[in-house]
Length: 141
Image 1 (cartoon, rainbow, N blue to C red):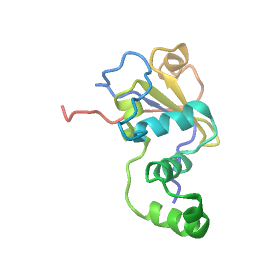
Image 2 (image 1 turned 60 degrees about the vertical axis):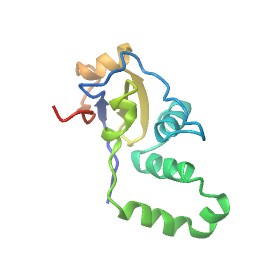
Image 3 (image 1 turned 45 degrees about the horizontal axis):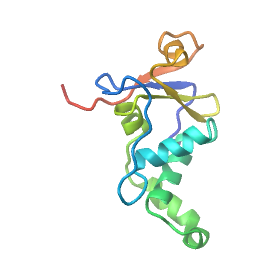
C-alpha cells in the first residue's frame, strides 16, 4: 500500500487559527508530534515522503533506540503501517500552525507558510497540475 501524495498541495484547514506559519511549541518533556514533523520537514525540504515522515516521527516520538531499530527495524515498520493512522491532512501543521504542505512529483514534501506568495500560487492554481486538498477541519461545523 502506498500512503504518499504526489503533485499535491494540502492547504491549511478552513478554520485554522494561525494567520502565519508558526513553529509548534515543545512540550515540557520534549518535542510534540507537530514539533517533530515541523523540525524534520523544515530542516530538510523535499527529503521525506509522507510514509517516511510518519515513520520517522513515530520513531522519534516513542524514542526508539538505534539498537532496537537495528534489531527490529523492518518488522517495526511493517507493524507500524498495518495500523490505521491519519494522513498529513490531519496534522496540526495545516490544522493549527498555518503550514501548507507541498508534495512534488516524487512524493517528497516541503512546508509552505500560509502568508507566503508560494502558498497563494498553489491555491490559485498557478503552479501547474497540482492537486489541491484541504487539511481536515478542527471542528465539525
